[in-house]
Amino acid sequence: MNYWPRWIGDWKKKTSALSLAEKGAYGELLDHAYITEGSLPADKDALYRLAGAVGKDECAAVDKVVKLFFVPEGSSLKHPRVIEEIAKRKNYTDSQRDKANVRWGKADADGVIH
Image (tube, rainbow, N blue to C red):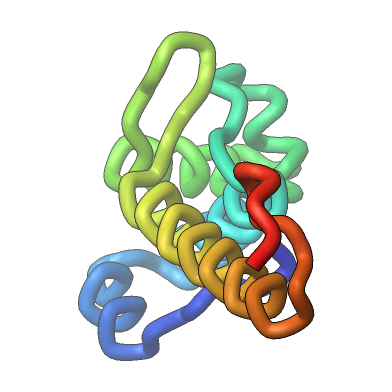
């Protein structure tokens, strides 16, 4: 996804206790999770590179954000809201494609022409 809905109220509520560095790390990790439509690597060095963390304090910010907001799943990390928003977007685009196919008489995903 090249876009994700950043609901300001939700963002403020979830990040109010974070430092500026932690908010930046969280934003960078969320951007990557959305653009890849899924998960982040669980490897700390890879996470630091994705977030652009180079110093000790920046790496600590990444560690804190991962601990607070991401869930380990195998060799990756997932963010429940990211997964939910991607699913919503997929449902929306699928329904819009189906509507367009009906309008223009194209076959749907099952090969049925309307």
